[in-house]
Length: 261
Image 1 (cartoon, rainbow, N blue to C red):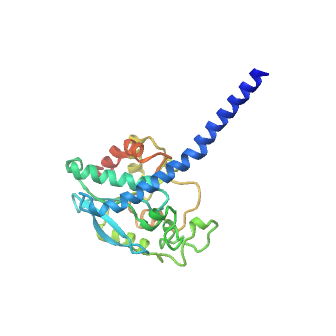
Image 2 (cartoon, rainbow, N blue to C red):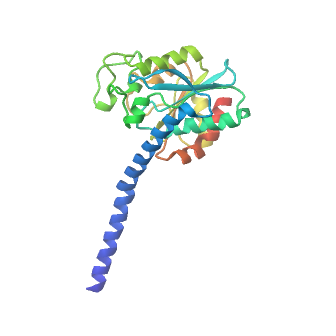
Image 3 (cartoon, one colour):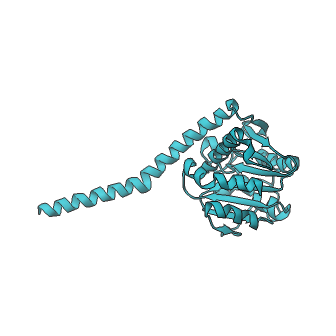
């Protein structure tokens, strides 16, 4: 009987540990990352990196950018199209800090935009303040007002959102030769347009598989808009479910190599 109760307690301890590992710890990590993200966004305006304001979100929050290097050969790198995918935001900030301290790491130009959707970032939501998925709001040939999930609400019409308009204006202003947008957590180097070689370069550093199809329809997506229709090489760097430090360890050198590619 004693051994029965002892083994029963052991099972409960194991089950409790699994519960913490699979449910409590991810929730804690997500809340901790959100708090870090809010603090990091506020710190941008006092950062040593000379960030500039390109425009403002629907809630009138600054959308920052920093341009460095050759203005005729530019890689445009975005973080946080989706406000609840915050690791990419920190990854772009870390890249900016690194290039500010060591500008000689790159031989070409780059424009860094750490957060395309600051309202969503601060709220911890995928969508912007008008509940629109920015990555379904671009004026592509396949844009549609039809959607099945609230998180993919494409807006009342294509390019209805201020964030979408500003991103489109960035393409016109900076005329990038290639673009990387950072999302999570599908764990892949997904490419649109003539970007297979760029995706394979990233794979050689981060080991994430190269894909041309994420496995579900994405009408009105930025990849369709910039990659398929404007023929700019676009890689959507889909991080796995990792934190900012591990993301930098896996992708810091990859991003620098992509700029120099």
